[in-house]
Image (tube, rainbow, N blue to C red):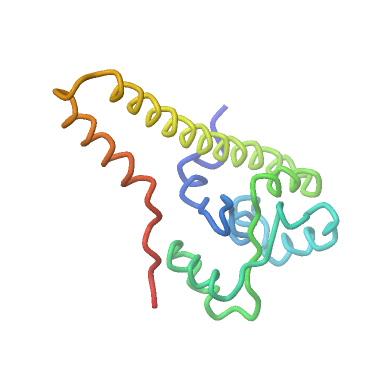
Length: 165
């Protein structure tokens, strides 16, 4: 079975906000094949299913940050309201209110993307731990190699500099 939406596209649309990996309502609506307005209406009719750890509305500052990360969201800059973002839990809950076959298939692909990102992060942490263990075990002749590996791993962990003023 071919995927409805490429996993790479979903992964590019997931970003971190308030320490959570999230997707913007506009991107989700597009993936589900419905208007953002209709998508948000369905969510608002079922707000009790979406506590703050499942979904939240971004601030104007966060919206501006999101726009710099996702060029296709530039029209949000002039919108009257700020968008909602959904965590992995929120996306899973969407399957209970969006019942079309497309919605079910899209949900499966999005959950796979979240899981793959989580596994990559765990793998990265495990690799760093193994290198530290090897470093403690081997003598000084390998210190240059370990130092280079540590620099590579530490560069990936540093948060990216915020864009803007």
